[in-house]
Length: 348
Image (tube, rainbow, N blue to C red; front, side, top):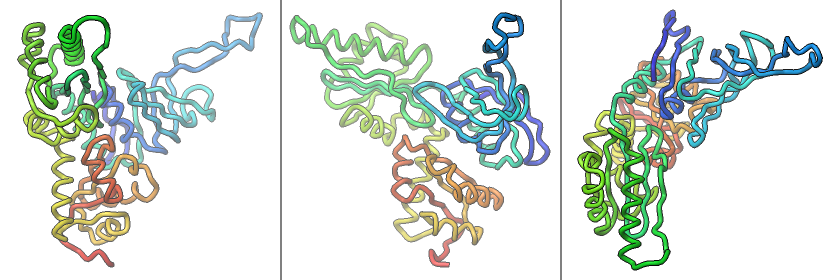
């Protein structure tokens, strides 16, 4: 994420940003809220001035509009973020329009009140861009899955199965290994760190193919174990230590640490609260040090008020991705939980 401009008076004002990756679009999904005024370059149909024969003819032109946001829609597999609302600045004021925000789009967000966790999210997005890309490759006999580690989850890059064409079994296996090596090299590019894992010995044989075909990629590979491939395999690898050095200070590592701290406090009836009722009680006492919120609930009425109250009391808010295991564990506790400064009774 690039921060282009800040024009703030206290917690009110404008921040201009430019997303540089799919992760940044995910961050923007949680930065932009209903009621915000967002400016961006967009396409809108306007009357074709030069067409005297058909004066009613419309053509699309690039214009800069400011809309008051009513709906926010993020599609990770389409690589765009849509912001829908009423035009407040530019042409056709009072009409509805949708801003399609893509990687590289410059936009300005104007808020009446920027929360401290939102400032922190911008800092995190800028810092994350400097960390190495991580690719997870899982392989077993005849099957392989490759994913790119994002800040919101693992994005599938390839899902390969061995073919059943003519020829001997060893020929099929060799061809499959070469296809997986090619796919890994494509996903990793010139700089990504790669975790190669899976059950059995297939991963060692694949590593030999990579050593021969892609020596530069081979230097960036860390080997690990996993009992399965696919989504469950990705989660297993993320729980293990192979990616620790790469992800030590990342958002994913932070979520993992916080959920472990929470579960420990819950198990010992310690400084923790979970579920809306108990968390609201803790907020009323000013006891919340870290508020943990599942991304699916962050925009729900009431939850946003809890988040504001916590930041006003100098607590920290962390939005958990529902795509990762820590987010799934938080969902099992109601999607909202808190680590507390001091223990309080769950009954007010």
